[in-house]
Image (cartoon, rainbow, N blue to C red; front, side, top):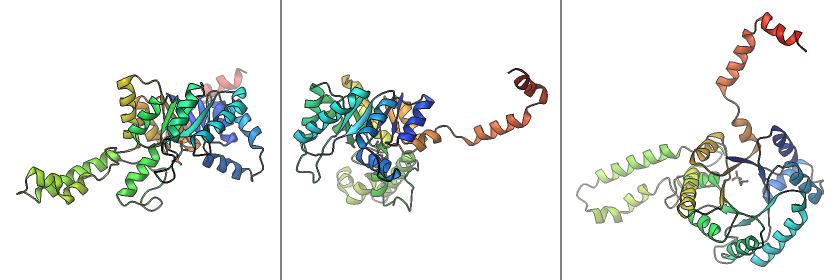
Length: 303
Ligand code: G3P
């Protein structure tokens, strides 16, 4: 599995690249904003992005800012022309760049199709459903980026949980536990209506509401979203690579790796979380304490 760093912070990118474990970088306007704010707003954006592209040993995704197809295509060409001479660049296009669900609904597909036909690699972003991913692949996308963490947020929010109160942004979402709870709750509701027919149970509002808990239209978590996209792509042999995005913790990365996802793009803190374990630290301390002088001497006496 390839690992991309999900950041626009050049310090983080330089450090992670020096470790030799990152294969690319993904940015978006929010991440660029964070990087600019960290530097007190005083950077030449063009030079800054050129530096990122030079440092990264793989594709750097840069996002357009418009929502109309023609404007996105122009911006994408501009970004590609400016930065691809310095390294690998992919252009992020939102799958459905609509602000109201009515206007600009198809503009993403138009831009993906045209840019891909020109040979510009497109990373389709803000993918929240398997069907969006399918359409992106059909339009010729090089990558799709399903936002796992945001789907976990959405499902938890729909269950009445509040981020910041009931769960933290980086907390693992235990969707298997939620499925078990939902199954039990459905059983209980069914038991309370013993005389009903299958038809009346299927149409029963209480049954429907309990049965639909813990999911977004049949998707049970961000990891489940990625599993479904991978299954669809494998069914039909699409070459579009899946970037597991909006990764919030190491366990999520493990789960998408187990699914065989092509790429996971992770924030810097997740990279650290992937390394640190209580028992590893305990072991390092114990080995350090057990070093006998004669063993230490080998290192001291052999420069
Ligand atoms: O890769 C997309 C990412 O930057 C969004 O992450 O944590 O804001 O949902 P997040």
